[in-house]
Amino acid sequence: MALRFALVIEPAASDDPRPSFADSFRVIDPSAPALSVGELSTQRGDGIFESIGVVDGHVQETQAHLERLAHSARICDLPGPNLEQWRQAIGVAARHAPATGEGVIKLILSRGVEHGPAPTAWVTVAPAPDNSAAREHGIRVVTLDRGYGIDTPARAPWLLLGAKTLSYAVNMAAIREAKRRGADDAIFVTSDGFVLEAPTASLILRIGGRFVTPAPHGGILHGTTQLSLFAHLEEQGHETGYEVVPTGALREADAAWLVSSVRLAAPITAIDGVEMPVDAELTASFNRYLLSARD
Image 1 (tube, rainbow, N blue to C red):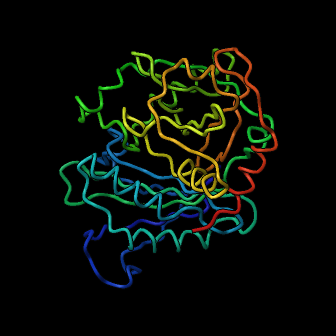
Image 2: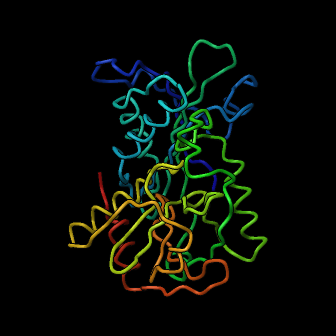
């Protein structure tokens, strides 16, 4: 989808107390060149990002996305973002999002130009892709080995597992491999047999009446949509849990979903060619809630 709006941010210190950061924003032509050839986000994927859903002009779950941006910055040794500055930038961007229907605001924080003085930061706005078919009819997935064990992130923090980085080539390659295998998406699993997440989404399983997601360690990105949906389920009296999920548990689930900020809740209809039951009524209620969620 073509960008509708772009805003460059002059990053402020995380403890900068000023009430307004308007003078640190610069609107640019979203179709014009804007980055230096020395920019490390393009040379090395050295940066982090967040994608925030916008529904009928309303931004979804801003605080959760800002907290995850700060979490990713800590893992990647980037300067801590000033969350109030980014909140104000999101507010500016939201005025350029589609007034009706769905859009997406993307936050990008890069290490900047090589040997440069400061990080590079910008915000973009675009219409969201049409995800209605995935939400209504579901998706088929395959499991793909992520290439490491469940204990690898603790032993090798320099792999940056658990940060939402711009280095998404592996994630995109996994989706292409899933399509080559006749599926729509993938679920990553560890080499020693535990479930992780999808390349661009969190996994939720319903097992024995409980809603379970893989615990956010082992290189799992803590999903903002999953967090919101779990809070909603708990308010309705359902039991939720974060667990270390063996791959065999996928066969025990009586329903499963991939959830993300833009796609929302997509029911899984098959895993590795084995058909899965689909709870269409519950899926529809999930998406009604997610579409109505506000900050």
